[in-house]
Amino acid sequence: MHTIQQLMDGTKKVLPTALENAPAVNFDEIGKAPGLISPYLVYSGKTENNYHTAIKIQPAKNFMESEVQVRCSCKAYYHYAWKANHMVGSHLGEVMPPYERKTDTRPPKNPQKIACVCKHLITLFSFVNKEVRKP
Ligand SMILES: [Zn+2]
Image (tube, rainbow, N blue to C red; front, top):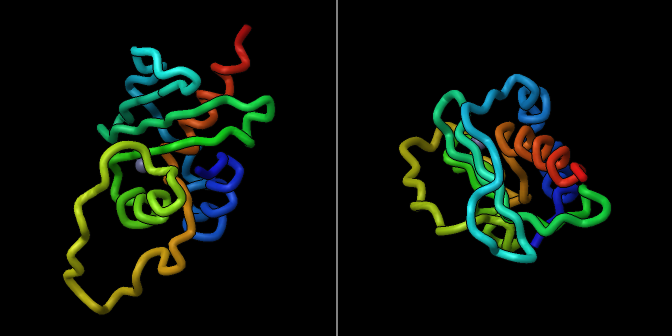
């Protein structure tokens, strides 16, 4: 399983626009998911564009060193992240349906399969970081 730091390092290589765009992401709903899955915590949210985003985390003293599993229903997560994350045990939940290429004109996304996240998950990481620091 990858840490948040590893996923963020991968995002810088694979999907750098996610880092630029994360501050503009707004969530309609966000919070800790019900149910105890100790030692893990699950946080999930629904963005204003109706994407469903979730992370399962075992918070470490250094937040960036926390191991996580992540998931998002957006296109960026599907095309760039899920398979690479699945390979390192950091994709949360069920596998996603295979993509059938419709054209050969565009290069494949993330051909090196570097684990990474979308902008929605970056915003959710920030939220969770604040939550786990609350006394
Ligand atoms: Zn997303």
